[in-house]
Image 1 (cartoon, one colour):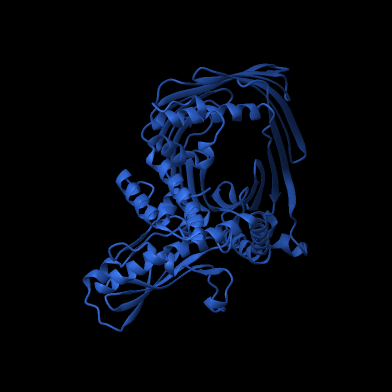
Image 2 (cartoon, rainbow, N blue to C red):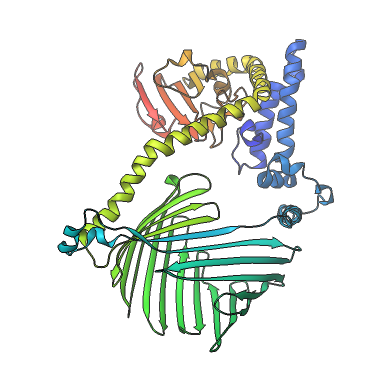
Length: 549
């Protein structure tokens, strides 16, 4: 989509006065009546129409609300003819959401939502066995699979409100196997949902579940089950009440009645960079308190986790990390240390809605060597895989995507380049006037400006993926100031994208108050020239400095 804000060089929260001012400025450059030659008139007409189109959208509060939320496609969405100009921007957004929801609901009827979970328990306690006699009898310690479980579920929408869910599970532990199958019917009701379960496994099972929103900040859910066995009926009951304490914090209280009855309360807080949960459970046969903290590092696509649990059963402490490998894949590694569980390394692989878990039991006691190797092995393994497998694969995929994008947009980019060249031709007289005015007051003059992908080993002038944008940047100078906002510079007048899909920078060499400065910024970084410090410091003529922002 075209970025109308960037084309007019205004911020997303620009006032109508700023938009009008930007439109008038560009109109003086691109209005066809300002040019005499037929060729220049034709170029000006194309750019003026684009300027006018951007202005008409941003100057109209209703169109601007649609554009801000949905982009250009939102202005062309089927069904918008029902929206009246008297509606507020919030009503326009709500109307679009309704139309989008209807389309999504039609798609949902034809979809399933498969979810799978495979857990493989590995017993590797002999590696760190403290009994030397056993080690002497075997050349290699024994590592065996002690258990395995598999679960799978799919959803089949019947109507917009009704869904059938089928799920099953199998598990084997030390040679003993169990399994079960459940078919559920879920119906969406006013402010909640209701579900009926029928299952078979360790005897027939009947259950009912439900959820309901009680108020804006309170909701509850719960369920009851009846498991029919040879020696009688085993009932189960669970209920949870949740209260929204603030924007990021929720409190829960849960009651569970059955073979293992309990009452628990917990509080969790979830923000953009932090998550923590504290809970207390009182029940039969165990009581415990637990706390979990997760530090989110979205810039590195990484989460660091620490948790602890202490109660009548003993204690468990856990630490680990989750790393996003690709758009749909993540890997998790954690180390669990506890009494009486010992030391366990857990590896989890997540691919879309499929999860593979490998708990590796390293020792039945807390042994420093087991803790050390459980911690360092996943880190070293990740570093090796990252360098030898993941990074080369991602690099190849990125290159394929770039080549595909170039091929797909070849014609469009050629048009953009012709439009940029036309804009530069039309800016000539305006730029000469700006330079003349800036020279008179010893103001801001753009010596050189280049945009694209910069490689250190190749000279700028020899690179095909770098374009000269000195004239377009000088044209944006007003009253000895240059302001560029935090959007891609490729949509600025006189610019185009010379390397689609690749990282780009804008390098500007400028003269201000007799001093030459150099600044280099990322494609979506904002910049203001000159920086405030240049306005306040005494500047010696014929000196140069490098500035990064």
